[in-house]
Length: 264
Image 1 (tube, rainbow, N blue to C red):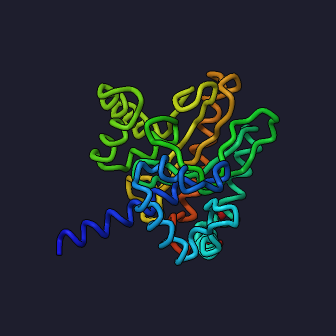
Image 2: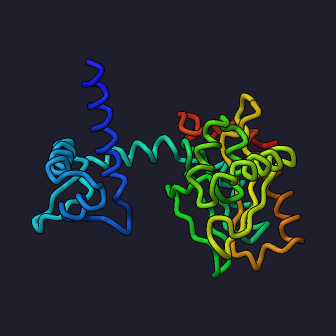
């Protein structure tokens, strides 16, 4: 019985890993490409694709290439309904964009990655592009240090182990997380992408616990993130994050899409 359970979990993980290969830049694959990318046997890939097609999650075109299926439309509607950020929070993000002239992103932690759940683009022509729904590793970036402030040490260890900096990175990461927690914000320059900088602050939930439920960040080219700019940005981001916290932002719950408080 235990073997059957383990095999079932393994099949689910393999199916999810296969789906995870798809994004806007990689919309369709041949069976051969899926075999090469997954490292699985062709028979296993064909079985997974067949099952996912039956559920409408994948679709084989007339040319034999496999892409996203129509069943994902329902999941997309669900995700949009659950994760749609209230207009009152959007207003705060837009205010921050106006104040800093930089793009503002709202991130949540999903295990060892951070996900952008909302964005207000800055007015500058040259800007750091992150799309809503994008996942980024937590080993780099100001928002990552903020979000890891509420994560168990076991998660931090896994994040450090997955980084390109080697085993010694754990101590440095723990130090930077502690600094972000004590000063109420974090700053990064070129940690995840050369030439990109960010300033982030924690958003705390309505319950007021110490762990952040999200991270609010401004990001842009390093050339614009001077010492004076970072000083101004850090104050503005912290204030905006506190305003969002007073609204009671609770990621993934039905009150995310509601809009009934904050004015103070």
